[in-house]
Image 1 (tube, rainbow, N blue to C red):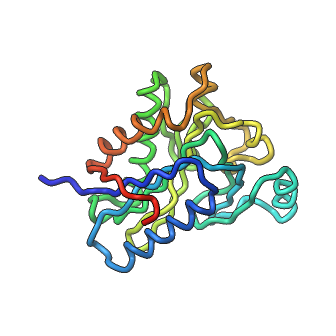
Image 2 (cartoon, rainbow, N blue to C red; image 1 turned 135 degrees about the horizontal axis):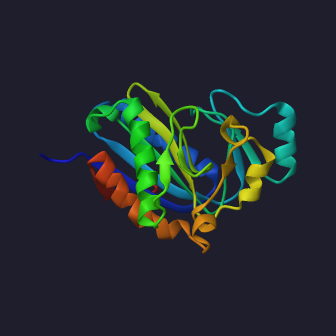
Length: 225
């Protein structure tokens, strides 16, 4: 049986707005011809600090002003969930996928993203990584979240995805209640492994986990498309 082919678009370190713009182009591409292709996997590392809120909000105007005063960008997005942080040292993975081509539903797509992050942690020697049920969606090491997940889906086509802390400066999370979860913490692969873990280091094992979990092939594509 032939596996569905997903386009792989690696963007290195770029402004968050560029990722959103490329995501929008891929959304329009899949919406224009639904069912003709599986979609794309967009990977990048944010070039600067960005706080984002989701469909459920998460940031008041006063909080937004305070965060901007710290030198961070603040954006409202169409993903699920509340407020979170994106910045250097973090792997952002936005699969823009037609779930019908992959035989998935939204719930199984979210579970697959969690499975990819868990598998990556296992590749790094962190066997205690686990996914938890809502409202604790994401991947956790103990009581600290290492990977946040927030997606959007319309007409079977997904956008947004996961943010995995590799060597992220975790102090940025101190200025918000990440994902609205009071009393929980955040961590990173570098924190857990007690060594510097770069985004570039984790991308190859992450791609292996993605192919294994989504039962697809990945075809590299120029980021300008």
